[in-house]
Image (cartoon, rainbow, N blue to C red; front, side, top):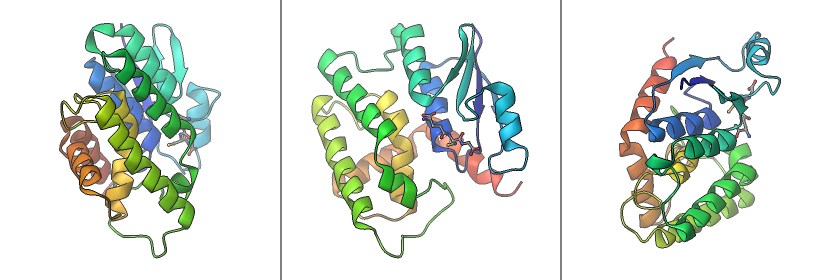
Length: 210
Ligand SMILES: N[C@@H](CCC(=O)N[C@@H](CS)C(=O)NCC(=O)O)C(=O)O
């Protein structure tokens, strides 16, 4: 099998980060192509890979897969021995639920707190709907820890696809200097200590210079 991941800037593309972390969790080698976003040729370059015009994209022996959640599910199905989802069915259901909520929601957070790994500044005014999203996410993380049996610092103990999906949220909460309860702060630190994330972050910060 061979994988080719097409991503946007590591500094800015939160969905690409999710796809890359899913591949890192799977522990499989892959080729990576970075298409810089917000450039005059971005759309044409993305359309050359997929009619969706979006990243991440994963080229596989079963065709081009668009969308981070579809990529995650494909890898989980393709590499069952790795347990990208928690092994326990109840925990797995909650992990899927959390990822789906992230994938389809928290629009206020996504709109008002764009992903930027290099940011280190609070919002001047925190809109109420963003605070509502943050409060819900912090509660959701706690629910995940409970459903996962609190067997480790990641959402379901060991790193899983749920962490791939919430790593960009951890980045937003840290880079916008949001005050969060201790359990959420500990989880954000867990993400920042995760080698797979650290490698992406370092590469993202290096993009600023190029
Ligand atoms: N639902 C999609 C969202 C993908 C998405 O919106 N990606 C953004 C970058 S993070 C993109 O490709 N934007 C195209 C552009 O900026 O030209 C997923 O989960 O993969």
